[in-house]
Length: 206
Image (cartoon, rainbow, N blue to C red; front, side):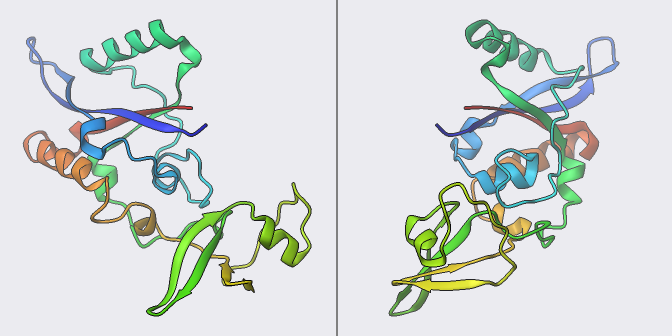
C-alpha cells in the first residue's frame, strides 16, 4: 500500500465584511496529476521521508481559519472515511516556498541505496531500494538489518552498482516536474494577493 497526497490552494482577501478571510482557489490533484513522489513528500512535508530531508512544513495540521471550500471538503472526507482516513495534514505559504534553498542537501544519505546499470552511454540510474536480496547477499546482510552507509560508498554486485547518495531538494522537487504547475498557480495568486496570503494545504492517505 502506498501513500497519496491531496490538497487545496487558498488565498486570503477581504470578505463581505471587509475582514480578510481565506478562499479556496485550486484543487491540488489536477495540478500535480496525483504523482506519488516520496522524495517530494519528504522534502516538503516530512511524509515518507526516506531521503532524510529537513522537512519544510511538517505536521502543522489543518489551519483553524481554513476556507469554506476546504472545511467542506474535510467534513465530507471525515463523513466518508472517519478521522483516521487521512493523516499528516499541514500547510505552506508561497512566501515560504519562495525562500527555499533548493540546493540544500538532505541531512544524511538516502535510506535507500541508488541502483545503476552500465549502458553504452554510461551509468544509468534504474531505481532506489531499501532492501535488495542481491545486495544483502553480496555484503552479508540479514533481512531486517538496518544500516546507514556513508555518502559515496558503493558496491558493484553482478551488473548493478549500488551507491549511497545524499540528494538535494531540487532532486526531489525538480524545476520541470509535477510541482511546477502548483508553484505557478500559487505565484499567480500571490501576484494579486501577496506572498503571505497564498498557501497550499495538504493531507495524505495510505
